[in-house]
Length: 123
Image (cartoon, rainbow, N blue to C red):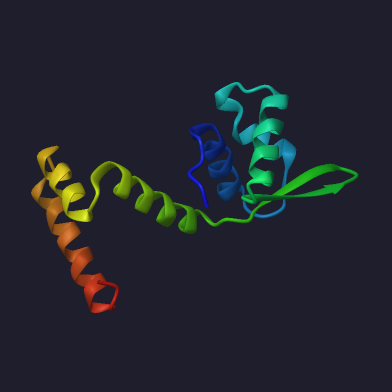
């Protein structure tokens, strides 16, 4: 899997929100706030299909799209890539968050999440 450019990620977000077998018109409507031309949306969808992020079904009413990569899977992949590229380790990431001004409540939430994950055998 590769990280997606911001524009293609916006298309995937719209598709994840819309669900399986989404008509092209519904995607264009969901992406209208960007002001992209229909050809631009088509280009992004074609790229995503080539990258195997999206499948397309052709029928008489038009194309319908389904995400082949779940939002959770992409987020897990992307967060690891960003963490590795920018921070090198989870410790450095958390240190940057704290220096950036994490509040005590947020620190407690992180601690509770780590405790929960440890109890489930993830850590």
